[in-house]
Each structure stands twice: as C-alpha cells, then as structure tokens.
Image (cartoon, rainbow, N blue to C red; front, top):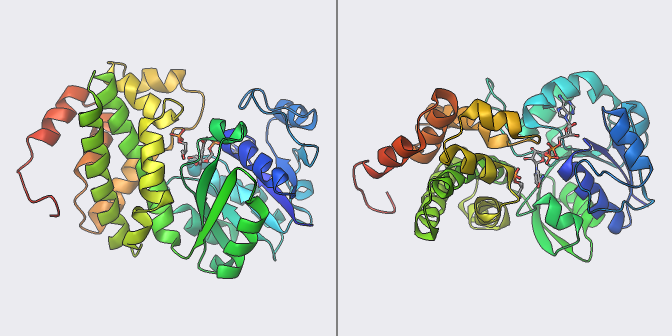
Length: 332
Ligand SMILES: NC(=O)c1ccc[n+]([C@@H]2O[C@H](COP(=O)([O-])OP(=O)(O)OC[C@H]3O[C@@H](n4cnc5c(N)ncnc54)[C@H](O)[C@@H]3O)[C@@H](O)[C@H]2O)c1
Ligand SMILES: O=P(O)(O)OC[C@H](O)CO
C-alpha cells in the first residue's frame, strides 16, 4: 500500500489527492488553515472544490510532521512563489526516502529557478527523487472525474513509474517521461500565454486571434524550453500543446480569466483584488522573461504580457505592439 502526503489544500492539491485516493493510495494532506483541514476531515473542501466528496482514504492535518510521517510520496501544491519559504518551514519533515512531486507551474522570481530546482535547493532533496506532474489538468474537471491525461516526468525512471502507479485512476492517465526541464517550462509558460489569450478575448477578439496567439505562444515556449535544455517533443505533447490549449481556451482557467478582465479594461490591482486563487502567470511572467533574456531567446508575447502586468500597459497597446513587429518566416 502506497502512502502519500500532499502539502497544499487548494484546488489542485485536493483534486490530485482525490485522484491518488481513487488509485488506491492513502493520502494525508497538510494545510495551514484549520478550517480547511477540519472540512477535509469531514469529507469536503467546499471552499475550493464544492463538487467533490472526498474519499475516506484522505485525511488532513496542520502538522507537517504528522502529514509527512512514513509517506512514500510527498506532493507539493502550494503557490510557486511561496515554495521556498514553505520548505524552509517544513522541508525538514519530508522523509529522506520519499519521491517528491511538484504539481506547481511557476518559475521563482529573482532566482529564475524552476520548482524542481527550488525543491532540491531549499528542501535539500536529491534531484533523482524529484518528479514533476503536469498536463491539461483543470482541477474542477478532474474533481468530477472527467477523463484527462498528464505527464509524470523525472530524470529517474523508477521514481516517475512509482508516482504514475500512485495516481493512475480510471479517469486519469499518467504518461511517464524523462524531460523535467521541458515539462516545467511548458507548464509555467502556458499560464503567461493564457493571460494574453484571455486579454484578446476580453477585447472582443474571436477564435482566429486566439489561435494565432496560442500557436505563436507555443513557438516561443518551445524556443525557450529547448534553449534551457528541454526536448522539443515535450512541447508537442500533453504538458506542452495539451496544457496550452486547455488553459488558453477554458473559462475555468484562472490565468485565462485574469487576462479576460485585463482585456475588459480592469487594472492589474483591480483583477488581483477579485481573484481568490493562484494565477501563476501573473508573477512568473517576469521570471520567465528574465530567463529568456539571460539565454538570448526572443519571447515577444511574454514580453508584452510582462509589460501589461508590471507596467500597466494597455491591452490594445499590447496588441498593436505584437502586430507591428517586423515580419519574418514562421519558423524563424
Ligand atoms: N487548479 C488547477 O487546475 C491546477 C492544475 C494544475 C496545476 N496547478 C498548479 O498547482 C499549484 C497550486 O495551485 P492550486 O490550484 O492548488 O492553487 P489554489 O490557489 O487553489 O490553492 C493554493 C493553496 O496554497 C495555500 N497557500 C497560499 N499561500 C500559501 C503560503 N504562503 N503558504 C502555504 N500555503 C499557501 C492556499 O491556502 C491553498 O490551500 C499552482 O502552481 C498551479 O499552477 C493548478
Ligand atoms: O487555472 P489555471 O490557469 O492555473 O490553470 C490550471 C491548470 O494549470 C490547467 O492545466
């Protein structure tokens, strides 16, 4: 019997806990808010996933030691920019022999580290034990057991296989792979492209415009990921184009919805004020742009999203800037 600990009781931490429970894995969740912990122990997490009745295989605690004790797999699902501080607080509770899974889709501000690098760095975890799960996995669809697939990536094939075994459910199909860098860059960057697509939708643009941003967004995501050491094939797969389509097209995506509001004319601060959950692209656009500049990669859409988020550039000016760039060959 596999036992997993899930750190983070938000949408995806809870939905992934439910997937693992449906796979036959016992799950203990750690949450910082006592009312959410109590709700989970009563079989619900209504604040994040009101449609989900939790399995009796899932329990919760506010004590990180209790959550992690004896876990074969530790799953991390807190907002990306909080991971380092969290690991500083409870990283020492993680069992030395557990596989450590990142569900997070962000790049750390300041350091430009991917989440697997932060886990190794701040959690003292051997990179051979780090696994990344990423794909078209909108939590609210998974919570009602709609079929979806995902990528379980690790440089250690055994670790990827163990995690895939612990989350394979009748409606959730994990595919293993070795490309940690590509999987993480694809997951973090699609959030930024979804902000741009949402912004276009908010301006009243239709499917041609959105498909154009998605496709050119995939081109710059692939360029960046490959420059960092990722494999091009990853960007054509579930963690790449699969997640990009889901996030850019779905009203369930927080990043997409954030972009729609910007396109409708709200300011960044106004949107933040009405956004309760994590929209990772809002913070990671700057760290991803920093990564791209450091590696000399041209990322015009990410650059414009960053200007919209950090400088308050107007949505229409973003569109004008993108359309007035010098023309070039599509593959260039
Ligand atoms: N929701 C999805 O559909 C989905 C799917 C795949 C991946 N992800 C990724 O999973 C990660 C988590 O997203 P989510 O949807 O669960 O977010 P969420 O906003 O629903 O939940 C975040 C959780 O972290 C907690 N939290 C917030 N600040 C914290 C802090 N400083 N310390 C500790 N805990 C803190 C919140 O209380 C909440 O329990 C993100 O990187 C996201 O991109 C989300
Ligand atoms: O709601 P978002 O925008 O964080 O996207 C959720 C997932 O990453 C989709 O796979």
